[in-house]
Length: 178
Image 1: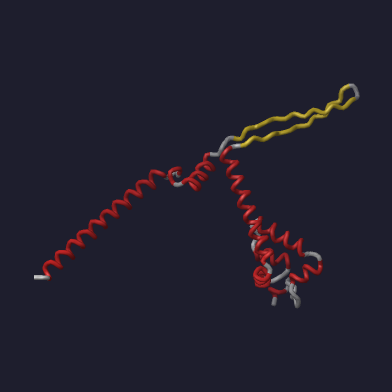
Image 2 (image 1 turned 90 degrees about the horizontal axis):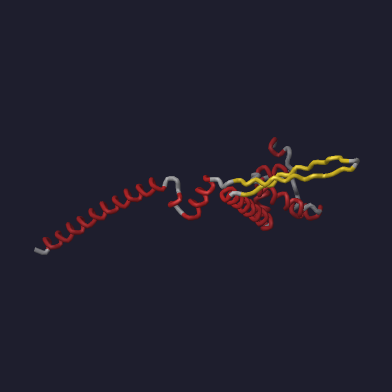
């Protein structure tokens, strides 16, 4: 019972209540925002003052909730990928200072802009190349290549055992016919 202390108990469908109160769009925007910020379902439910199982049932009954969550997660994924790309490629920033000077009783505004080039980040480059274009760009490429050679050598060893077994089986068939 102590767990239900901060929760509201609804006799009607909470979705319909939100709709009736004009809060449905606000709640959907809240859910989408929380999903993009990786807020857990438990934390969302606590804020919305509903039980988790109620939220799960709402997601099944009203697909708009799950769609809002999925869309927000996709946007987050896209934003993170763009940030990683920007870090890997490098980018330019502009710092701006505004100075106000008084000369002869008149104010003069000067804007001083400084462009800075932020260079590419090696780890971000390696990460993206490895994820998108394979192991040849991995920092451990040589280790992976040696491991593959060892696996190939083991396959050859197993193949030779299989061929010996087949030869042995063939010779048994020849002798059984005598």
